[in-house]
Image (tube, rainbow, N blue to C red; front, side, top):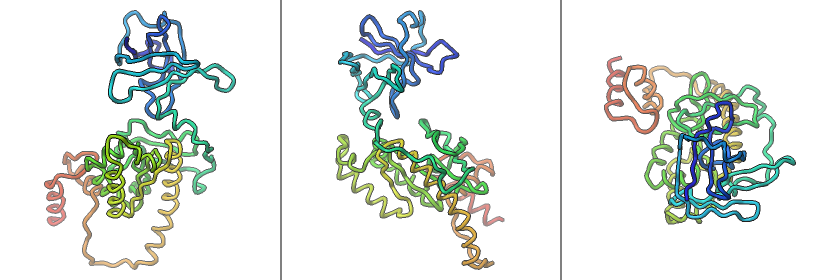
Length: 320
């Protein structure tokens, strides 16, 4: 038995995939994605004859189990990760509805809070830049904010003021947080974030989930996070319980950073007198990356810069 996911041949459908389960002669659903990774997916049941004669298969995975239990179908795939899910038949706003959910999305579905819709920091024209590499980006649909997509030097969500990146938020699921922590990638990400005036890491889970993590010893995770906070105290690591609350926190944080940027610049000019002849400080990685691109050098969108790039910047600075 296999679970099969194919592309929906109907170009006008807002649900681009077809999901087929080998149950009761074959059940077919239209759905919006290939797996409920970050949220429960709405499914629209269709007759079996809607399955195309020559389907464009996107994914086909063996099944360990596919059993209907009451108003739900429990599905267990024959693979190590992302292997358990449920097709749930329910009602939404008085109408019959079907949702495809995983254990993680089911846990996050009801945080038992209602996030506010009031403007953050009373800002009516906030624009948040979303890193173009972000696969499952926040939409900020319930907030009064515009989004633009472009490559960010660090973080996943950024705030630009006068074409200068003044704040950034790095988004992490718990598995991603642990993976980047144990591989060392998180240390470099924190170093780049620390070069900005404002930056943070937001985690879409509770801190208590660290101690339930099975693939890495909890003490290793907890010690690693504590060490990073001591090393980079200006970059808080914030646990927000659910993806919805992490998105809300990101919106409020960047709005506060926008509000503070104007105040901080004005006070800085009044408190610190402008002096000439002072020694120039070492620039941030983001500044050198921007200079290198302007000079025609090939540099990555994120991560550490090669020593020869720094050498080229210093040579140009000296020659200038």
